[in-house]
Image 1: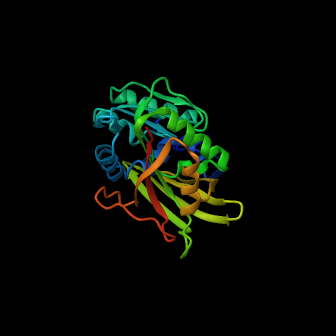
Image 2: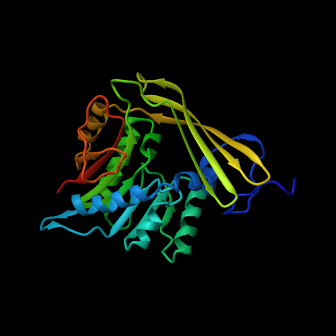
Length: 282
């Protein structure tokens, strides 16, 4: 093994050379560098959302205290909410992400409350005031059955009047959907460029496939991590019909990815980026 081979800065495990195919979620430090760098707008929006929309009680609005994130990944928002005074917990299917998140919580003197689990089949020890899932993880659930199971789990997890803030990309009915996106970030001598490009779209089977990659740059190496991501597609009508199936949840407001709490949006056939604010019914 070349001594100059780069390593994961969080685990010191050797990073692969050149291009390899694998699960990008197995590299939480690289994932967090790209997707964790643009956290402030979402963080501020979530706090404003909890204040504006709930949680509600029979006696009126209440302060959100217990917050849960399904598919929490590296906990990029979770630990910051914890530092802001919320009691936070999370769940993720990938053990490496869970370990990264818990070590991060520990470094900030917060309880290590992230666990390995399936977002379609979980139950918390006690209900929470609010939950959130901001960046399309919901679309990894590739069938109506799995999506409904997840929403039912969230509904059981929330207190009555509690909120679920869910962000996802819809497939617009007019115009062309975005086919390619790229993000980049740098921390010290490490830089990562992430790309996401549509490779196929089958609306009859509600499936989109994407090629996803991380180009990782260190002072001595440039290598690429590659894999394929499969997402379920949703039009405005398909998502709203899904929510109508979930007896305990209702849509109370919708926003776009500008995260402006004072500027909710109306959904139409051109809507693509949307944050749904869902509430558990009384």
